[in-house]
Amino acid sequence: MMRMMRWALPKAMACGALLLAALVWQGQALAAARNFEMNVEDTRITLVEKQQFHTFAFAGQVPGPLFYVDEGDEITVNVNNMTALPHTIHWHGMLQKGTWRMDGVPGITQEGINPGESFTYKFVAGPSGTMWYHCHVNVNEHVALRGMWGPFIVRPKKPTALEKTVTKEFIMMLSDWDSKYAAKPGFGGLPGDVYNYFTINGRSFPETQPLRVNKGDVIRLRLIGAGDLIHSIHLHGHVMKIAFKDGFPLANPISADTVLIGPGERYDVIFTADNPGRWMIHDHVDTHTMNGERPMGGIMSVLEYNEIPRDDAFYAWKDKKFVPDFYYEESLKKGPGIYTNEGFKGQLVQ
Image (cartoon, rainbow, N blue to C red; front, side, top):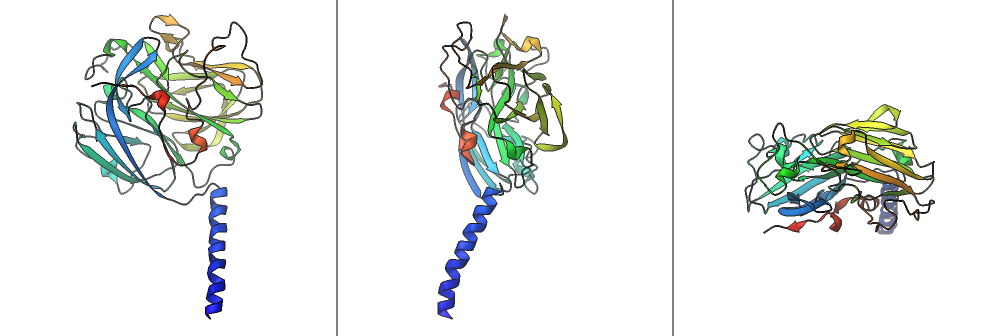
């Protein structure tokens, strides 16, 4: 009997390891408990050139850290408020089944997290898809003008056939800013405000970064409306498949070269990099490609193929230093975790 047990235990362990490997290979990673800690800090970020903005930044950066988790994971996030105003976090897209008190709405599900205080959120990650998180105190100012937002990606237990083909992913959070409130925390976000700066991941062109791809890559753009306006994202030279809306797969993906994203909305578009060149990707609401009163700014970037030289004298980014992970494209390769980004860090305001 003992001989049988000594033989059976290693065999069972081996079978278990094979089963776990098979589940991971199929994109069905087992649920895990994931514990995070995050501060909210007064910072000053630069949108473009000399245009700065006082923000209430998650982990001192805009956008906030990337949360990348698996569907079904048990999430714990301890939030410390280091600013002079109250805040909460709403985990936008999470259904909070059985955990409605974790929904992050002051006066409804919790008190605001007062200055110097902490609050711990606990919930199960679900459903899967492209989600995000943001403050729910004075959202008109804290979200629209103070950069209190970040990406929250939930990897599905059962990915669709289309998303299984993806080889490279980029997160693009779109937002709007009114410069007259840049140095006035606690004010702004009122009817009649005029937004005059527009950003991808908290930066305006040419302070954004190119999206670098190889011919044959299957690209997934995770587009998130983090601001207060509607944006119309147009990609030159390619046909995109609008495959997901607010994290949910569409039964029949829509072919398009332009997609409208409203406040709070998320669209995942997938396309094949099959047309080498340098191709614009930009907001087709023309006033959103301005930096203040100057054109050729705002929500603009370039899809760059690595097969194409970048040495044309006229190219706007000919001598620009490339900063990887501007779209969290490198972090998304690493699997579940929380990922900060030094490039998004602001200057701490005392």
